[in-house]
Image 1 (tube, rainbow, N blue to C red):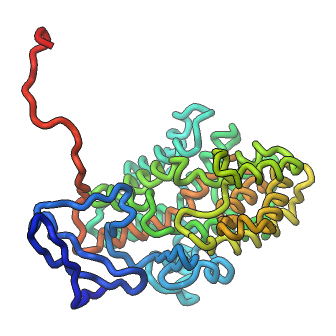
Image 2 (image 1 turned 90 degrees about the horizontal axis):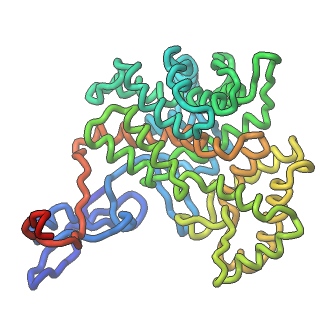
Image 3 (image 1 turned 180 degrees about the vertical axis):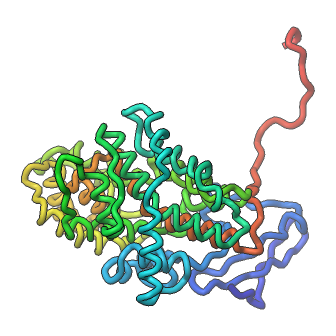
Length: 431
């Protein structure tokens, strides 16, 4: 970020103020308003912070108009098609792609940290069997600070790194055990001879009564889901992690806060909403009716999984995810799954309809990830936990970056107060 010689001029109550302008390496210029209140006595008003940069970062960049998503400068489609999740994790954490020996050491470190402290099983047993897996994940991740005291000092770079490795390594086990507890099956321990995605699938779907072989197509599809959801700039959950960490909270508490935010249906529930929509449509012959409703501006129905709030052109993650969806459906078939039959036909008809092309309402990553997870056998209640698992590396990378930033200060947004002004207390007998 460089400060331009030019500045913005702001007139307030007859006074003129010069505000510095910064130029990022990518994206629009940024007006620096940090001294606006002290100099002019006014705040800015930006609900949702959609026009406000809350930090500077070198991790992820999105250009929604171009349909561009970069991690450390690398396009997401290249990472998802040529790389794998743990290599992307290394890139996110350390800023550069690893060489062969660095990657081997990193993969070994993550693999050797996948087990949970044995006493953490008691936390699971404290929940009702019908507890939502996200409720379990929020509690268990927050409780990690009670078990791993040697990685909670945020001022120690080595402890920050250990905490980062532990969170990335243990999140698949935490999520898989939440699933097992939800279904009433016994917990399955991780194995060091399996890769990250294969380990997760085995911990979710294997049972003691028989051996479980991980299909490489399913493992690759799972790995791509992890990669494509690894980070997404300053979204709601990432901003929550940063705000929590600005107070000096330990890393496990900060990531638990991010999981809690992601649980909101407006954030992490999009792929679940897609499956619920497909279930509502019910059968292929009803698709024309629902497409017509989606085109009717007076009808509240919307096609979930089409278009994106950030990407105004196309979702760059969707192309790779579609490839995985096609591979998984070819492997598992859709003959006995009405929702998947509806999904494939809806995709075909929407892509051929000029209305959707004109409005740039293309299938997004949530549409295809929901299809894949449904085909694999995950219930919709596990969609958001898998999202949280994937996003952990993004949260951790953003947390590490913020802690190391010398400009870091506790978050304290201002407000536009519209309540009562000062008034005197009235005794209860006089009200």
